[in-house]
Length: 347
Ligand code: ATP
Image (cartoon, rainbow, N blue to C red; front, top):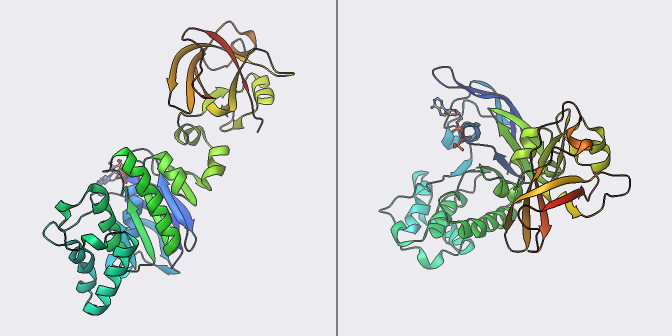
């Protein structure tokens, strides 16, 4: 086990493109760290630098108290699980898992013990003689995990390991990975562009954008108090409603979490439809544009109306835009209805 520390890590690719612009992250021993951000933000680059698959242009990567910038991937005591699993198609499940250990010259008896234990944990014991093509996507993914587990590394690195699975399998594998990581208690760094996966897996969430870290912390703390408008709109689905705070009453009376100067954010679940203005508060008038019923809850998409003096007439106010409101159950106003919504939770 080991902690992983990135100190002012930079990466400039040949040709001059600066993909990582000084990243600082501290992952404690046994923690599950998730790097999340939109396509091209540099998360894979950062992970590959930790793995030793990319050179580091500047700064330091420290694994277990040792700076590894110049250490070969094989000597870093890490194991990586890739998006495409990278299994050998002609080898059995057993041999896929055993391969890396044999390469290191480990005795067959020890290899057998490790592979069988990993197979038991991953519920692959009955499939050890099969070839990858005889497995489902989820089973292949588990073999890829098994190959990492048998090495008993100090750190697991995951590069979008679930992105080739269908939605249902993604969710069940997500839960499996988290259970497994808790049980093995191995420091892990996991890359995904899926904010829900990131929220549910992470002990420590690193939100990246444009080669930089926007915010690091506990996922729920980031959800509650996003530090920037980027984080506010990236974490949470549907996204947080962002409004200008030039109308001071919105900030003081509607509540919401302040992000960048002048912007207040209110999550869809923190609005409720009301027929009266709350005491001492304001209610935003909306025209219902669309309704999404997803079962246990419904999302109401409304446009803000110009005629509301308290909101739209303030100089500097954002143009009337869309507001998303989450309501429980399936009963919803009709499209075109004029409603009022108020913040139901003060932050
Ligand atoms: P995705 O989710 O799409 O995989 P990512 O966040 O993992 O994206 P990276 O793959 O780390 O992003 O790429 C970060 C940036 O670096 C991108 O703009 C990409 O085009 C650029 N990049 C990646 N590899 C190279 C390379 N070998 N040479 C030059 N630029 C590169």
